[in-house]
Amino acid sequence: MKKTFVKFMLFSALFLGAYWSASAQIYVRVRPIAPVIVRTERPSSAHVWIGEEWNSDGGSYRYSGGHWDAPPHQGDRWGRGHWSHDREHGNHWVNGSWRGSGRKR
Image 1: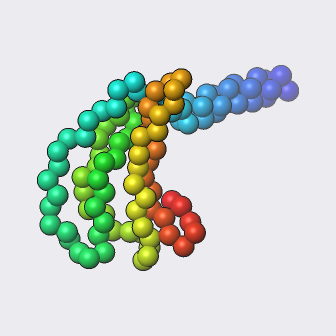
Image 2: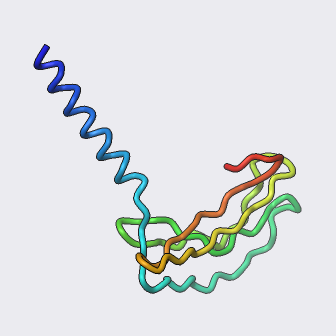
């Protein structure tokens, strides 16, 4: 019984640690500058240009915008990502997402 309890507690601690680290925000004092990307020809009338987008990468941000993408469902619209400022912590990126029919992805 004691071994089971110890295993459970160890598993719980690992799970909670992984959960908290996965949901942590990355804050920066100075927003990174997006590189200049040449917009290529639109592949089809359904495609939407995904401009400035940033992904967290080891405590900083990596640019991932500048590409065409097709909506996952007809009628979906791209909601652009943006920088959000927190006076206490600095800036963090809020990811863009596909939206449509009252749902958010």
